[in-house]
Length: 546
Image (tube, rainbow, N blue to C red; front, top):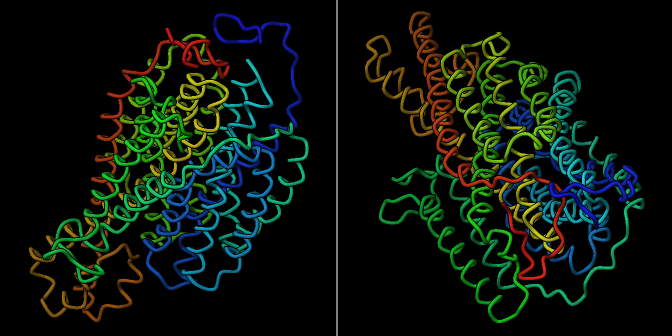
């Protein structure tokens, strides 16, 4: 293919139809709509299943954990059997999972349905990148990659709006019923995609699959149970303890070590001339590793915010799913347009400049939210903070994905897709789990401190509070379970209200610190303009970036 020095096509290149991109984008919408709908449906699920909000978070973690754990296997299945064939199969599997989700009678079935959705997503994620590489070139390809990021953000907007309206006036189940219909539509549109024959010679490294899955599942499961099992000292809810020590951090450490073993094993297979589960060329140089680190940070921050805001609005304030949708709409709309329009800035600014500016904006936005947030999420100052964070987040997700894609040959597009899926979904799982553990942990500390120093609340009244199981509840629910005088009840409600708000503020400040630290890896991003997925170079198959 003839290209300009910037990686864009010459006028000789023919433009392809955008109809295949509709199928690809809707495939992304399936996954993003599903996972974005879970926080909006939190209040309804808590009421339907009679479970705490952290159980809903477990559903989010289960989905993300399965995608992250098996997306590398999904990439190899795409390479071996062809991206189109795998795409169609997993879209149907995703539809089946949504049938289970829509009619789930209890939280266990809900979590199972999310696990099945995650298994389908593990093969769907890498197929999207491979299909773009197969169907588009040059400027169309850069636009298609931006559209994929916009589809993810647009699905978030739709999930909050549709989920908010249906959840308020009908219920949370029809929200997931929509995905059943959408799965059928995507399947029909998939017949407009260019067919690829697949490569039967591609080997699947099953030992690598096991190592990668064990590493990611241990890390995700460990983070998800930090609050339930204990950050250091084992709680009564821990399934076992190690001389009184919580198993949660132990699982995290085991996961990291198994991950190191996976990398060592993969290097060994490559030296032996065998097909690895993940081609490590996609993270060979510091620029690509910096993009992966930065992508992990921005997706984790998004997951933390997407969990924290619905938690506060629906569970703490007792407001409807529609109120959550309205509160989050400015953020989701901003992410959508930023992900789509940031492509226009590529000819003028380097990835390094855009990345550093994006994280600086996220840091300022989260600090601003920490200082201005009160009990009204629709207040003007809060909306400003959400919009600023949305601009930074939307720009970063599209930029970092483009950096990874443009640095790798077309033949490694599936590996880039699996790396993106692993990073995004592990970050989402860890971000959601940390948000829940962090906020509940802060709340517990603040309430315990307030109770100890409050003479207006006698010990017999404090005994009504389960100090080993403090969680976010509304004032109405707290009042209904407390047998106290009017003065004592008012004091207890005041303590609860202040502790919740302070926990949220401190949580936002910690998130801003993470965003600030993420500027460090962006300083290693390359100084080139993203464009086409490069063809293999004559030596080594790598594109040399300026």
